[in-house]
Length: 420
Ligand code: HAM
Image (tube, rainbow, N blue to C red; front, side, top):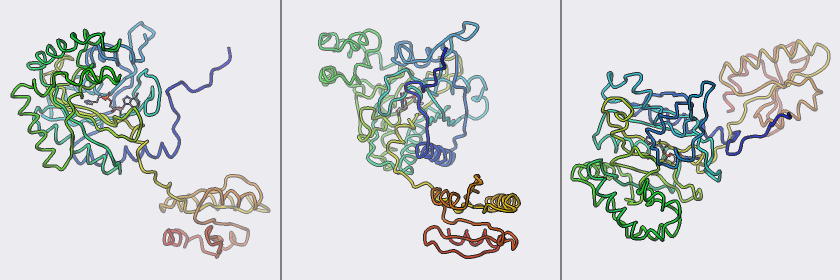
C-alpha cells in the first residue's frame, strides 16, 4: 500500500513567522504569569476519556462530537486532550498539591485537539496557554487572574479586543434560572434550530449562545442569569467588577456568555476580537468551584482561563526577524580545508561571544558563496582567503555599503558588536 504522506486536515505545520509568534507568546507568558506567582506544569496530551466526560460534561459539544477518542491496545478508551483544565485538575489531585500551598497557580501550554470543522482560527490541533488558580473562592482571585490576562494581552500589543463578563450563579441559584429559561424556550420551541431543540432538553443554557440568527432573535427576551444570582453570588460578582474598574480594565456584561464547558459557576469571561472572523474568542475562562471535588479530590475552588494561540497569532503585529551579524565564506583553492577549519573555529568563537551568524557550508566557488551571503541577509560577510588566513585575519565586507576592510580575527567580536 502506498504511504499516505499528506498532512491531516485541521493539523498545521508551523514555520516562521508563526513559530516565532508562538515563542514570543510563550516567553512573555512565562515572564508575566511568573511575576504573578504562576509555575509551569506540563501534563500529558493523552488521558483516559472518562476524565473529560466527567469534567467537561456529558452533554457538551466537546464531549458529544469533538473529541479524538480511541481504544488503546488493551481496549481502554483514551482521548487526546481537548483542553488543559481537566488534566491539570487530575495532576493537582494525584500529586496532592492542596496539602502543600493553600493556593496553587499553575500555567500550562501546548497542543489541544478538537474534531471541529476547520476554518480561519479554528483547527483540529490548536494550542492554548492555560492558567489555573486553585485554592481560593475569593473574588480577588478572579479579578487578579483577569487583570493578569489583560496585562498580558496588552504587553503582546493586541489592540481592539474587548472583555466580556457574566456570572453563571451557583448550584443553589442556577436551577431556578434554568427552570425559567426552559419554560421560556418551551413556549417558543418551533422557532429553535434543530441543535437547540435538542439542547433545550439536555443543556438549555447553551441555547443562549447559539449563533443561528433565528435562535439569537428568539432568546433576545429570555431570562437573564444576573437577575437570578443569589445574594452571595451577586456580592461575589460585584467585588470582581469593582476590582476590574479599579484596575482600569474596561469590560462589558454579556448575559449570553454561558461558555461551552459544564464545570463553570459564578464568574465567566471571554476576550473577543472583531478582527479575526467568526471565531472571535481569543481567550475564555471562569470559576469552577465544584470541579476538583467532582473528580474525587478535596473541595477546592478554582478559577482559570485559556488563550487560543492560533487566534492571537492572527492579531499579533508582525516583528521583523533579527538580522544575522555575519556570514563566513572560506575561499576555495589550495589549502581550502585548513581555511574551512579556521573559519569553522572562528564561527564558533563569534557565536560564543553572542553574535548571530553562520559559515557557508558548501564548498562552491567564490561567486556562488557570495550569492549565498547576499541571500542570507547578514550584516557582514567575512571572507577568508589564503592571505587573510596566514595573517589570522579576515576581509569584513559591509553588505549594505559594499565597503570592505581587513580585520584581525581577534578584533572581530568587538568590531561586529559595535556595528550592531
Ligand atoms: P475554551 O473557551 O473552550 O475554554 O477555549 C479557550 C480558547 O481556546 C478559545 O477562546 C479559543 O481562543 C481557543 N480555541 C478553542 N477551540 C479552538 C480551535 N478548535 N481552534 C483554535 N483555537 C481554539 C477552555 O478550553 C477552558 N479549559 C478554559 C479554562 C481554563 N477555564 C478555566 N480554566
